Image (cartoon, rainbow over all chains, first blue to last red; front, side, top):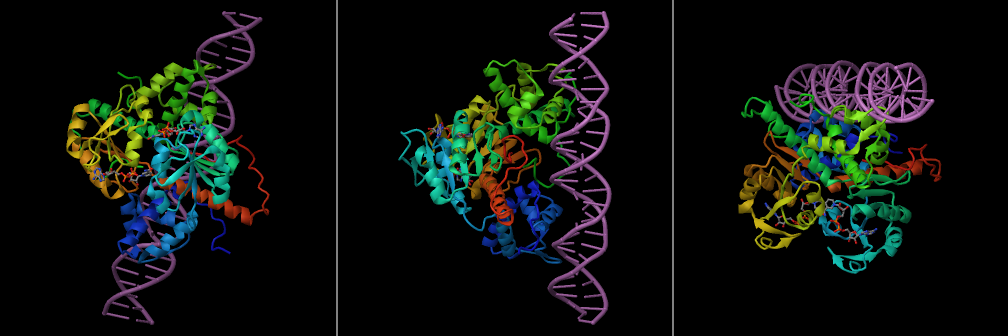
Length: 236
Length: 236
DNA sequence: GATCGCATGTGCACAGATTCACAAGCGGTG
DNA sequence: CACCGCTTGTGAATCTGTGCACATGCGATC
Ligand SMILES: NC(=O)c1ccc[n+]([C@@H]2O[C@H](COP(=O)([O-])OP(=O)(O)OC[C@H]3O[C@@H](n4cnc5c(N)ncnc54)[C@H](O)[C@@H]3O)[C@@H](O)[C@H]2O)c1
Ligand SMILES: NC(=O)c1ccc[n+]([C@@H]2O[C@H](COP(=O)([O-])OP(=O)(O)OC[C@H]3O[C@@H](n4cnc5c(N)ncnc54)[C@H](O)[C@@H]3O)[C@@H](O)[C@H]2O)c1
């Protein structure tokens, strides 16, 4: 039986664990063997108390007065995130974005090999993108089943995104990463995350605009820096 | 003088306004002239009370007993987000991702035309990606200055991302959208947002893993659906 | 012009996330 | 083996966000 039974980790923490993991792996490569919550906080751009609380959800894996053993922490975070094995993904839509994703080595390195990429356009089928051959939609189910895929990526135009999601679900996928700027409707039990780059730009635009109007209304142009936080602006 | 002076809008709300905006524009195109908080909530996959509270930060632009006039709401959200004019962006890094971004029409449509794309690799310079010619790094400042760019996109490998950000800041950019999986360090007054696709996949992986272990520990395989929420899984 | 239905706008209670502050405890030192 | 410095782990306070529930007020109807 595992140490704590079925502890539920807050979503906010789950979203930060991958960031810690990334940093810790980099530190390992630099030969660092031990790290304090302060050190990790610095590298991750967050508060040290938050780091400690986040890590405490995994269990007590630090040593008081010393810090955390990097290797062991990597192992524990990996385990918690389910990264102790690969998660092959299937990409639907071999357009601009789908091709960039398929050709990107970073996913493979981080445990998400591209099991296949499918497209509805016959002209795209059988072309090679990033070492992967584009397959027709009819093979989607077969790819999912044979490679035991549970994560699908939607990279089709918005109008086709729901169709793509429906096919993924029908094929047996239970998690979807959606790049189309539309809300996907899926059965209960399927998890969807959306990445919308236009939304990100619009959030930046809001802050730009706010800065501009604050300057206009403000002390007359002289922009004096906020107290501190070292050398970092609004982040996410 | 504007109606409310300098109301501060909660970050969570700022992040949802672009989603409402997108939906409202689509509704306009469908000929819909008026929408209730319920309707908008449905289309946006959120709670109706949240929609009302979010919109109330902009001012009282609804009509009790009726709803919101779509056109007017679009206008107000645009204004609040600073989308009453275009925000040209400059992309650093013309690799897989940079090319996909430059070739993507959706940014232009949503008010973020690509003012330029630069790369450090001479072999890439002068090639055309998505109708835009790749420029050498030496022209970055000139592009930023002449097109009045305040938003930069980092699409270089992680190791070069800080360098790219430094150059953007030096050129005068005050907002950065970072696609490299590293924390960027920037001066106070510069806003950074990070989009990390591997993080998104890892969050999905966490939920997959959790589902799997819950099923193993659970009632023995028979997956019965959660009470409801209609037909939608975990979302973001 | 009084009445009624209906959707907004918001006070309030609750939930979740962040941060502080400090007791607990490990390892090294004398 | 007792002491000391240092960092973890966590209770408690605070801040932020969510969602209910309902008073408010608009517009339509009679
Ligand atoms: N390219 C980018 O940089 C970028 C940036 C942000 C968001 N997006 C979003 O990502 C999505 C894809 O963008 P893109 O630029 O790659 O578009 P694209 O038009 O280049 O490619 C879309 C691909 O999907 C295929 N397709 C269409 N309908 C399909 C269906 N029902 N099933 C399977 N395949 C189908 C098309 O044949 C095409 O190959 C869009 O929703 C877009 O809004 C793209
Ligand atoms: N391709 C994807 O789908 C994808 C997905 C997720 C994340 N990313 C991230 O996006 C970034 C870019 O990925 P990619 O696949 O396009 O990489 P890539 O290697 O194809 O392209 C990177 C480009 O940046 C240029 N470059 C390198 N150093 C530079 C510098 N100092 N200044 C300016 N340009 C420089 C290179 O010449 C190259 O053209 C990476 O950080 C990657 O982790 C990419």
